[in-house]
Image (tube, rainbow, N blue to C red; front, side):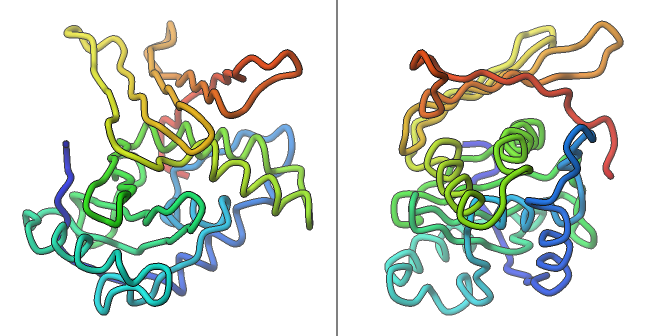
Length: 232
């Protein structure tokens, strides 16, 4: 598993929560949504109704999350020094811990950082490279941006069940010439498949399909998004 091992917990809770709260669930309809911001992990966490864990990787989790402690700590202890956790978000349905890794230990880089979804009691993880979590974030925004109150809460839970990893066995690959790539992983409501390819101008777009999000005919809803070319 690429980038599976993580080193250090460093909470950026206050700034991340403030930024995430200001950008998630309130996007202007018709405006281009760019998920590549410094608070991208909090943005994803808030958008699916997850909870920020201030000490999850230090003291283990309380209550339902306590059993996750040893597995997640092991991932950290075995980590190479160039990666670290920047913050962690927990969601009980699906049971997942969302963390971020970065080569830039001081500031992070939303155009290159990876999203790590710790699953199976924290003993395993699914890693989404930047283009993949950006596609997921844009899909979530597409389903939640115009919602409020109860409708927003329901949409967030629907996104968590349908788009966030709940188990392992992801499949991924890239064309030898680097013209396209893909990743497929299980969510609670079905399978998620994300592929990227190049537009004619050389920029990239993502095509994401979630079998747990059906249209009126019961077919999986597929969406296409132009991937960010720079951080917001």
